[in-house]
Figure 1: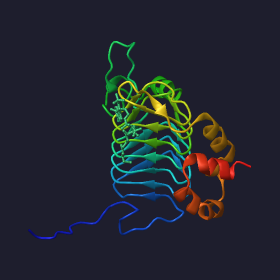
Figure 2: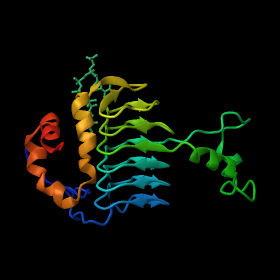
Figure 3: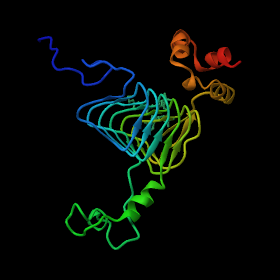
Figure 4: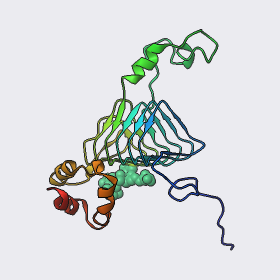
Length: 219
Ligand SMILES: CC(C)(COP(=O)(O)OP(=O)(O)OC[C@H]1O[C@@H](n2cnc3c(N)ncnc32)[C@H](O)[C@@H]1OP(=O)(O)O)[C@@H](O)C(=O)NCCC(=O)NCCS
């Protein structure tokens, strides 16, 4: 047996290129027509299109986000897909050629009706959400503040704040915190604190559970 240490991690947490306040985007990823907040990170082979990704949110790798509003401090695991678009099921063909016609050299224009229709279904992810490995969040769905989406889930309906859902279709497993704590955490809204306030509270984020944290900071 031989001890092996091979290759560099290609992410900002362990890799050679550290994070800064500027969005961190791996060279293999694509970000188009989107806005990224401070301390955001996009790992390997991701695509972020027509979306907003607010402060501190990150995609691990091989994740796709389209036409979405992603809140602050959202954790998006690898192979997650947010807003996989639908094809025009009412038409005689589902195929691209009828709307991405230019790239198929089959018409001089593309069909704006399809892109406008897709734009109506913006997926919204609240702050402090965790989306587990390989989950899919469907078009137009809202995932509430502090919610957890289990690995492999297919989320077809809105997810309530501070709940945990999993499965296909995703169903409620349990609440993440009790109602009193949920309300307090939403009043505290620590995700809107300044960076300095958050840094000062790190010992409490570490040692207190959510109920204890809510009690201490809900003034
Ligand atoms: C959803 C999750 C957070 C639940 O954790 P938990 O509250 O500790 O849940 P438990 O393990 O006690 O399971 C509770 C029930 O949910 C089911 N369940 C848990 N995770 C599930 C999942 N991802 N899909 C389907 N069912 C799941 C369990 O089988 C169990 O069902 P039962 O009550 O019928 O026995 C966790 O299972 C999960 O999916 N984590 C995501 C991990 C991940 O993707 N990490 C990526 C790196 S960021």
